[in-house]
Length: 134
Image 1 (cartoon, one colour):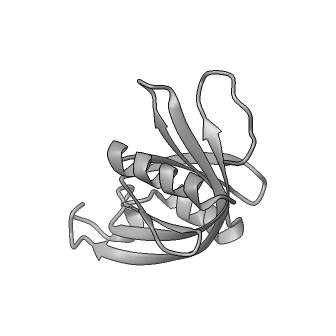
Image 2: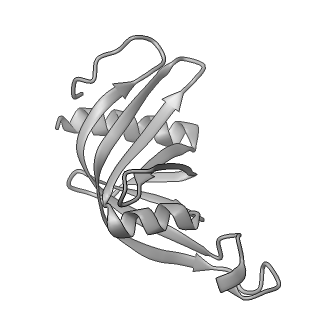
């Protein structure tokens, strides 16, 4: 993987303030979420932070493969970062936000960070493009 492609993808993610996060469960059923924070984490790694829904978290417990997409729809330019989750950590926790126990809440109560080791960075756009690595 070219480090320049990852740098450009991270710069675009920072400018946009949003990334799409795609995971799949053990049967390969996909799930898409978004993350507001995308940051470098050293040595071909990125950090994603958000109040992730339970589907994203449970998928990563059984299938660490992950795809992270940053895309500027106005300019139709973007990047897809493909890799594996190396861990999930808690960053912040709400206390009583929903007025009930966290176990029965459908609203995430914990902001989490996903550490991803990026193996490939490829271009992403609606226009015809190649899946060649950046």
